[in-house]
Structure formats: structure tokens, C-alpha cells
Length: 127
Image (tube, rainbow, N blue to C red; front, side, top):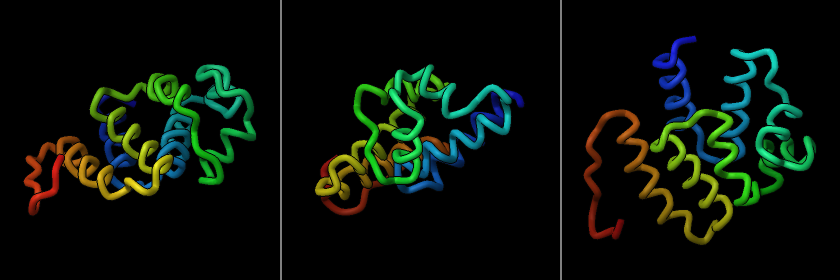
């Protein structure tokens, strides 16, 4: 799969998913469909995640991904800067539900950038 097609598929996942667990699961499924070597064991080894069970819980939304694994996960999925920012915002929003509205505004801006659109904020919401 070419880089442009792969980048488009990653962007689509980041635009369509609403939780970090669903996003990670979709990214995993995308890479697994492209590379036979990709497995939970492979991801755990590459990111330093201690167990496949923990990774499964994260992808199912039952646990939150520890912040020390955020950068390695972005690296293993080969996310560019904007893509990594969207994933980071999803991870932060899931980790801090009380600030979900703030993260949602920032996420709309980044998602608009992924689509190549200019985002125009509504009202007096600080960004």
C-alpha cells in the first residue's frame, strides 16, 4: 500500500473514531491487514507495553493507555505530527472526562486540518 493511500486510511480512522480505544483498535486492524507480522505481541514489544491483556483492555475501552506509551504508539503506527496530535487529544480526553468539551474543540480544529479545511470557531470558546 502506498504512503498516500495509507495516510488517507489513517486520516479516515482519526476522523471517524471518537475514543482512543476505538482509534487504536482501528489502527491496529489497518496495520494488521497490511503486514502479517503485526500482532498484539509485536505492538507490545515495539511500544514497551507490558502485556497483551493490558493492550486488549485499552483497545476495548476498559483501561486508559498510560502516558509513557503515547509516543511509542504514535511511532509504531507511523503517524505524522497532525495525526499524532489527534490521537493525543483522544487519549487526553479519555483520561480527563471532565475536560472533554475543551478537547473536542481542539480535536475539531485538528480534524479539519486533516481534511484540508480551515476551521472557523463558533462563539467565544477559547482555543
